[in-house]
Length: 506
Image 1 (cartoon, helix red, strand yellow):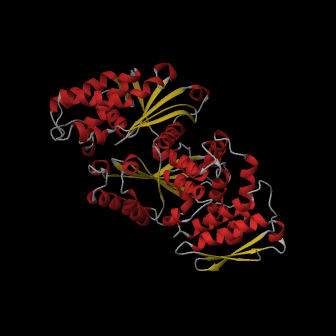
Image 2 (cartoon, rainbow, N blue to C red):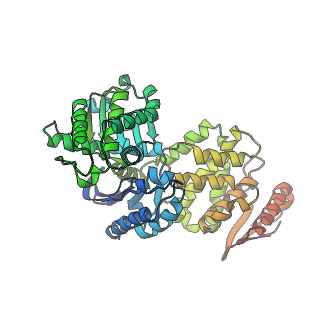
């Protein structure tokens, strides 16, 4: 991206929604604007894990204000990510459908480990870069509204990442529901947090890292309070946590808390946040933690910069790693990928060349990923491997991918063969249908595990919800099994309610 290009990251957190706008300057991103809205979506989940109407409205209102600020930005310049609350919410699609329209851009619900990776990227990019810092083994902790992320890394590389379902909003609701601060409540909250975080003991022990950093949210708020009380700026210590706990106990409640350096919107969730932070310090034997300037939104900004066409996209690397881990046949993956791409370009000429600056090019790239992974389920069982593959993609950790991106790839893998009724909900998306048809035809043409004749089929769109497949002369006679499978494919599409496929020459 050229110097001066503006990029924007939207973080839909459990406690706050944040908008960070920065400008590219020689590979670095410098902030030009920052907006924060306290929406408390995390306490808007009911007992059935559905977002209440009020919680959704608070989110929509905040995104409307962000959307106005983002008017004029291109799609490639903006990324919005949602975290734990929307990972949990059963009715998240109801919220997201309207939220995307209001914001004017897509919103990715990211897995916990992907959130952790992006947090580390944000922290690492905002720290000094020199030989000493690049050798430093870092522990990064981010206590959010409903989740806590822990990462160990070095320089710009995160080596170990985890996300735990414990956070300031969730713990404040559970243990300080009336806003009352008591010794018994803090004791119970810390014990409960340690029970959730106990798995971290094996992976994040003191001998695994040199310096601890705390990102965003709770840790930043605690650091501000301790600095206002005369502590070293940007540093959280055990003694400081003890002092802050004493201040909260003396106040007795969030309403009565008067303390320099703490914003009003933080008081309602400081009890839960402090109890989780104290549990982290105890479990990992932390004496002091530096307050980091970087956070999730900064990681998202740098990820946008790295997704520029001139830089390798991490998702491509992730696909290659998954294919290797699940022992995918690389020649068949290439064969199906090349064939599917050639067919898709016939339907969508704008995709030719694979440029990711337009929707067709991005769709072609995602089709390529699906083709690369279409046999990922065979390691589980060759029977119904397409179903196993879809399950793996819906449940795997895949750096660089959002939950909805993985699900879309899984739907293509699921739909590569068999009945189409299982994909009925996705068949309203014309781009998805073109990807799906291209992949299914490629699987048919490559079923003998040899390169097909590139001129075998001509594929064309006939207008509204209809496609035509024309076989080359004499091809059906030369490849009778493939011709039979093509005729079966036409029958499969006839059983869908909205799409028609015509076949000629076979």
